[in-house]
Length: 185
Image (cartoon, rainbow, N blue to C red; front, side, top):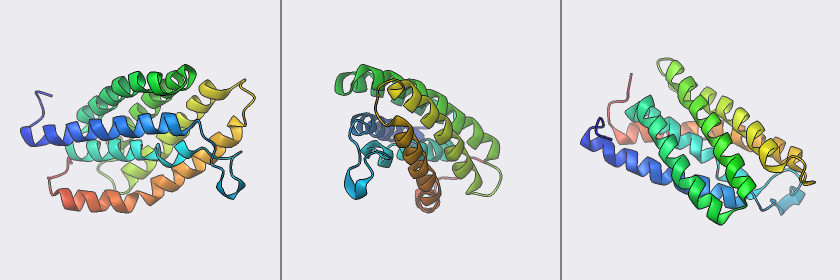
């Protein structure tokens, strides 16, 4: 954190706290099928919280750069895996950690390569690709061979993540305007 300006340290710590909260909540919520509307074979409650992790990563990347975004991913990973190991099943915690690192680091890389294009392209494409990889890795590692309807959950989860990737563009833009810190080029 020494390379971050003092104003950016608060942003960084808030991003780490947000990331940790999202991942821990999602690792608990993924264990519960989404019963309303008969969607228990297609969704878990975690599908509605986890897409916010990409939002946190992308905001961090835009405001304080890819190096800080990677640090948020690593810090969120360390704290979240420990807490998830205590609060969820070990297989879910391990699968989550693996999928999280792969998906989030892909998001950071893609976002950074697209950052100079239209304001919406980097967060949308990075979140979509990161979500696709994260979903494939997580659901396979967490539930393959379990007898649970995990392929349906994966499909439903990915559909929700893609919806969030699109739906979070407006809040992303609003946050950028509200934060008023000159964004990284």
